[in-house]
Length: 638
Image (tube, rainbow, N blue to C red):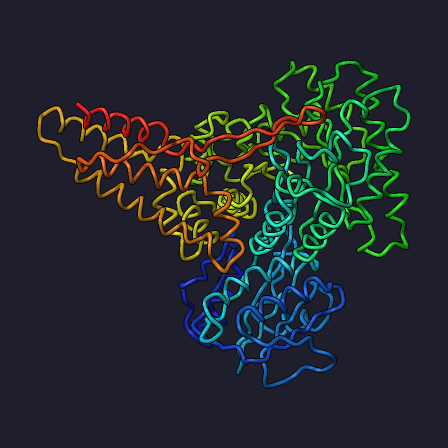
């Protein structure tokens, strides 16, 4: 793109000098060129949408403008002079947006659309009396992604905005979440909130396969219930109406909501002649609730070694895809009525479980399935971080690209811990992940990268933000800057307090705390206790916790949902820091009851017929601070 940058720079020098003050947009855009020509929006803004731009994209534009205090109106007929305009179009369509882009000389280079990438688009502020914004994409979904950049630009205000041209695209096609952990399924409120978050940060995929959802696994062939009890709702049960609402919210945010079924061993049972019919019956139920994409899970039921069983799995998968196409993907079907290709999680998703020869044989058995079917792996191991070596290995066996189910920041095996730090700190804290893992600068061969998150969906937003940034722009990912941006994005005015508390919300404490504690203990040995640094640090932590408790009464639903996820860890850390400060000051406070209901949360364990409800207690700062509190109390009682 160097020639394009040079041409743009020369042309802009004629109108004004080029500025290097770029907009701070996440995921990091591939290229943005900002000039010192400023424009402002008129109060009324017309939306011009070409043929090919769907209603969801138009509605998203309307929503963004309204939320920033503007008055959007969908234009009909001729252009309206004297007002700002948002032009949405398809590359090379010769429609109003496409022509507008061509008429602006710096944008005559469309080389971005020749790249073998995804969601390719150009966004440009065209200088005029009032701001004119053109977004042209390879399709309407790409334009939708461009609107996410516009939304973040407008967060800077709607007047005196520097003109910018953005050339952007994603490195990975499908980016988002797989709700596939062992634990309480997310509530409908959390799921819908995640969809809205995903739209803002250019994520497009949400696969639902919650292991403890009985109608995903144990009762996989039965429709969802019409009614549930309050207790069932609390532990993640969903009704048909709730599922329909979830599907509608996903569509409104251009999130591909994939409902997955887990038929267990039935999918590979030669005696079960009705499994495909039963799956199709359940898919029809889900289709009628608004689902337009499906998955099949056969994970965690044993890896087949017999040739006939492996062949049967491939045969059933092919039959199922063909049945879907015959029913919903006929040539006369409208786009909104069609069903996208299947997603398949096989029995052998971590290929190191078996010998290389057997792994190769397993994936080769699936190579005969339709190429459009997405087949998932977790890499060499269950907790592997996406990497080129594993992708190339399985791609060679399978004969096509694979999709990655990434167990991160999953805590279903460490439910008392949360992972809310930067990506590489989370890798270190999650004992199942190789702590020295690094993200590839150029990840190749992945159709999808979707994360299997924590049982706490709102807390998972921080890691999800990082994955969104990485999968959109591999090379530009910067670990520390991303975490700061993630906490800003998720917590807004509470972000600074969260960054103060977060290292202590970890099971393994703040790295510096061990040093402070050791120094204090040495001072006690010398007979000259010096608690000042610890008192100051833990007081700041306690104050941050106190302010974070205000999330519970925020007007913002996302804040309140975040608080509910964080509450046991936050309240326990608040109590721990207060107790430690009092003890350091020589006081003798009553011991905190660390089995208090304030620090307790419920979990679900198991799948299928073995689901059970249990309680756990949060464990923040468990390695350094908790033992230190016990040490202080012993010292004070000497």
